[in-house]
Amino acid sequence: MTTCPICKEIEVVPGRADDYRKLSHYHYRDSRLGPFAAIFALRPTERLRWLADTDCAGVIVYTMPTPNAELRNVATGGLFAGLDRSTQLALVNKNIRRIARVIIEPRFRGIGLAQRLVRETMPLMNVPIVEALAVMGLINPFFEKANMQGYTAAAPPRNERLIEALGSVGIEGSSLISPRKVQDRIDMLDAEAGTFIEQEISLFLQSFGKRRDMRPGPARTEYILTKLTDRPAYYIWFNPAMELRI
Image (cartoon, rainbow, N blue to C red; front, side, top):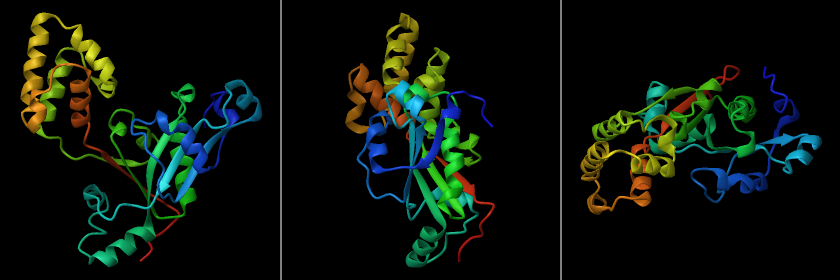
């Protein structure tokens, strides 16, 4: 149980579409809200709401699952594989819900609210399995801290090479989610390190058609980072209180 004083003044409650809309621009993939299965919000007490001038500290959005997920088959031992499409879809929809978004208002980050939001709401979905796909989970493993099990697909060798090259000049870890931070670090490299990284970036971009001739700068760096992290980790949670619905 958390001892964070602020956390004690925040509760997990059923949310609304408005809660998502208030925070959607803080997500790295800001998007309009489509069909959803459920929304839960982190609601501050009246006192904290007055101090922070907000009635929503975070939000989680659940949707129906995608019909096919390669790592789902790995995580479930092929439980949903080898079936005709209609049977597979019915079985997946009956047993699984997907976490599509987890957003914490910036002032409330770093105190464990994301994992709390996931951990406390998964049982409320009343299904045997909850899953999530998330790029950010590779860097901030709050899904695993919420008792979900993670699986990752192998990255292309070109990704591993560039990540290793960037790491060799001190550009690594959480900085790889911020194009601005990465660009600033590249701009600060000495001549030798800068030439080395430029050669590695050029080699990496050879696999991306017209993008291979992108000029150095923030736009190119942002594009490179999207390709480096374009390998979502898959997370799954099996509800210990429910059996699979056949």
